[in-house]
Image (tube, rainbow, N blue to C red; front, side, top):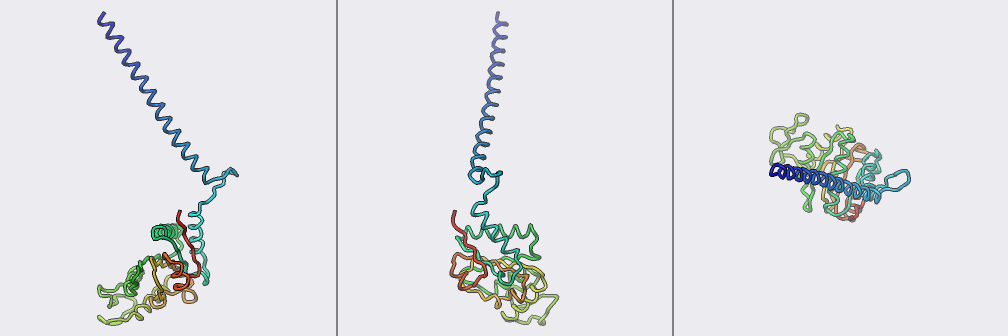
Length: 228
């Protein structure tokens, strides 16, 4: 009798385990279906029924604008300005750099942070290091194998600019990204050639101010980034 009871008890336990197993499978299936429905919902928010044609978001359009501007080899569009909040502009600039690297649009991509109080010497040093021009810690001695002023000779900002300009002209294509610009920067004083001097040089300037980009930097193409 007791053996029969134990047998019944074992069967009940097995049945419970089987029921729980199938219940668990059903729960997993429901979770997967809900995630799929949610994904499809967001898809249909950004796509139409016309051949499942994807409708780009505003951000996608802005990113495409930037890339189109970077690809153009026109003296009239060498300086491109990105304007918006610091966070948004930083995101779009980084995306543009990644895509330019992926598509191999430039031999060199140089990024420098300008900040509110621009330091020409610091900017020149950052650009120089990126293209193989090395200045010592004080930023006064050129240690270049291709151009020497002599042992420990101090050089001026103008001489630095001449070195940078000549070195950059050796590159067929180069992108210079000037981040966080707050006022006018003299590109010639820094040593960045563009236009007739170097049509393969593109300059991407980011700022939170439309006035800085349009009036002080006189960018050739201004792209404003709205908040989402």
